[in-house]
Image (cartoon, rainbow, N blue to C red; front, side, top):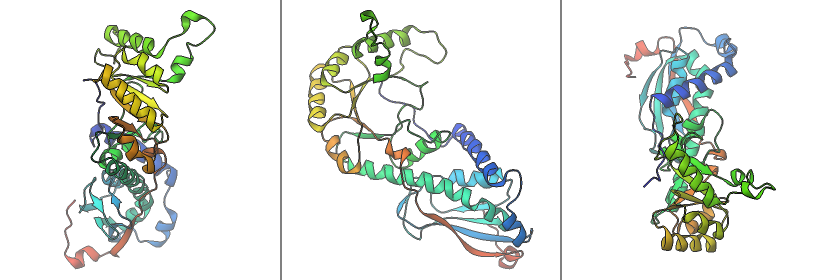
Length: 324
């Protein structure tokens, strides 16, 4: 059954995307200069240790990104990690400790916390949605409503929270939406495509195309907002039908019609999905629920750096050798 998109994990491709975002973030903060506040107050040989501490309950995400911040700054700072991405944290949880040059720790502080706070906020919100549908057949999916340049990072955070990734981009699947059909709804009758006809046309294309990146098993999904449209597309056998902005009664009816005609087709509810409504949506019998707010409007999780000690000779005096 063609109903699964590729899922994001922390791998070399994601790490390279993250490095590019970090390089831009460093340039925004330093503009090829220096953190003059830190340089004016902290000796160049000062060493210290900070704890990365959660101030709120939530789900951790973004620790590899935070570590890359100091790497991209060519810092020799060493990390001791206590909590892995995807794990729950409580107020006061020490996520990690960082030992290194005080100038590096101060200069990189906000950038590290921006990554940790943003991604942990996404993971935390995702887990709330996932928990809300437990006991049903529905899974929670993200959308392309992501911060430009951050998509892989934000979708990695969704995975940390227990959610699933929708198509990574336009290249990964066919998703026929209302505006694709509206383009064909001109004054000439033979230019008009029904949603079902559009599915058949897309299926013929992916099965016969020799274009780079296409393949016969590419997922074909179509959006409908009326039950009559659903009847039309089910006969064309799409892999997934996106039910846009349907109320609960319509969703239940859609599931019934699908079960009677094409039980192999997956149904995805989308539009106006929130925590107060998602369980009732899941109970209609749809297999998938896509939630744009996972990535476009989460609250950052409050994570901070607390000094454990700091001086130019602190490490020698303590006799510490902290592992990376």
